Image (spheres, rainbow, N blue to C red):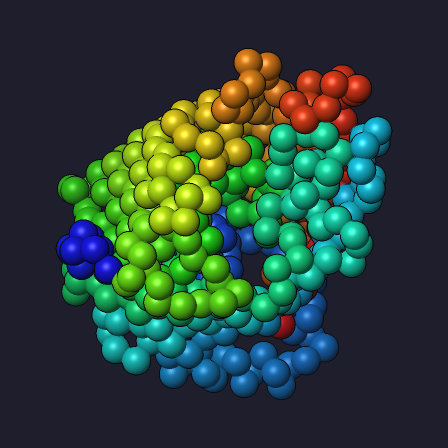
Length: 393
């Protein structure tokens, strides 16, 4: 591995439970283990599935008291498109086992194993591309099979002023995040997840971290394997040295609300692949999102990049997310984008509503609209409807 990856890169740690686990965003293991949407007294509709398997959850609660927390969950996503091209329908599922073991006061081990599988010829992640739009319409819902997404150690300072994270990491857990970034609980189109101008690597070997810069400012950095393949984890980064690097500088109202109240600038760079399959690329992104009355999150996000690997080389998104006291969630996002080598622009809109039957059962209908799809000349716009479900045990 290049000497750069051995340098000390520090990370921000959230206060409370999240601080003990290191970097945490809405789509991270910590985010999935400790959901809450920032609400202090959620009003739940049901206790399902805890009420049908009380022994299982009591056993899990006992393990959690000893420092070992975990979940099993299963997600599905079905989508249908009116595009003139392609299959027109897509569906897939994701089975996940994830958790955290904290053997010491300031150190913990995080793990996540997944199996992603398609029920149809085209998975939702690629339905937009299949229909002629330059769009990832079902982020993470692909047909990759078994994956090791996380297996890393987090170490934090006793005063939570820094955290270091190393091992098998997924940079999208903490890179350029905001409150509605998770494709498992919020928007499904990549335009409103991790910025689509960033050539984010697949989960793989890396270092991540950051440091508090006062009460409201922070820095987050990462160095990761640019050629990673979580379906076949390896140590090739030590020999090929192809790295993805990022640095984020941000402002928040408080480190316990880092992805609810957040304004930040992210810089990134990815090395060219030694085999010539990927050219060097780099870019910058900006994000501003602020939780209003613990209910609304208006957001503005933008990015630019130089290179050919990222989905877009210019992107501007704006919208608003909503969180209800019953832990329902909703969002409306608008995106304008340009791609490398194409002077035309593509406009994308997405709206979703997440019904939280209980903390362990969510149902999320959505609709997406894509105007001037960049990969086809025979259609002015495309509509997609989707239905996502999630059950947690």
